Image (cartoon, rainbow, N blue to C red; front, side, top):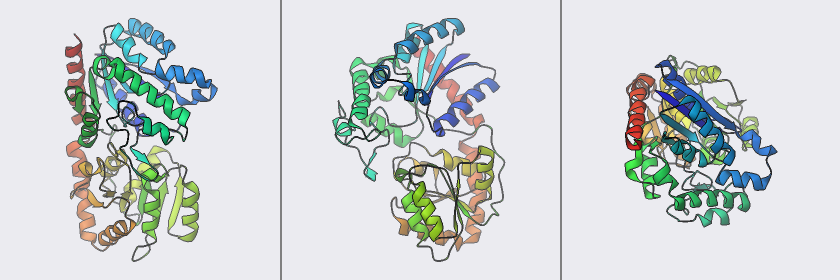
Length: 388
């Protein structure tokens, strides 16, 4: 099978880039021809605001380029990971015009919420869910803190809803958790077009022993990721315990301040993937304190693969991943409960040792490439059958 893989890359690469790379590599390992079409958000800086708004709604250049590429490579499926903002939904119509089935992975809530997170002013927010036009997102400047930019996003999603893009131009949507699927159905996407397929890792790292004697956080340093809760919890532990923080973001200054106040906190910034895996594998446990409706939780299955248990907030899709075999859950936004769960786990070393074994088993049972590949292929064939 020939696949056109399409992705609009972010300025700060994250989970979507990892999945895009892993999925395309997996397809090639299995003998499929994959043509990658990507644009990078670095181009935004060199794009005039009016042209950016127009291209977000409908990028005519991308439409023409993709039609030409499809004629040359003749793919059976076009698999989209992100079209916002540079590629635009015009890309779906380019594939349709050339008779190619369209699959879209929904990594976030962009179609339902201008900032894609269902998170505003330090709390979850569903004000735009189910709205024909997401005016609250404009009123509150939810995208990039700008009413103008928020209006651009709202206009794009509303225009394409009216045009029937989500119902007519996409054959299958891949959702990566049951929680996310429920939100998209509630937001008006057709249930018969939604297919549940979790993320996976490729290649798979080998498990570690967790002998480093520290906890670890990996991710963006931002409020929706629960950084404030994490740092507050560390001040409430019964006894000090080392914490390594990996990542960067708008709360970096607060992390620096906390590291000055608590010598057991160490901020390591961004590190290459192999080093991150080593640090996670040697950790006693990983803390995943998100406060937004996570659609999945890639960092959790990375920890499981290394045999590292996870202490996570009970919100969004996280409880679908973290259970009694892989870690502990705490009340989201509650540093006292997080501290209590950490203290309990540190006081029960036999339970911690058990979780190291069962976390890896949980990964092998649910999140390997070998399990994921036939699911992906089935979705492609289903999209092709619908399109033909």
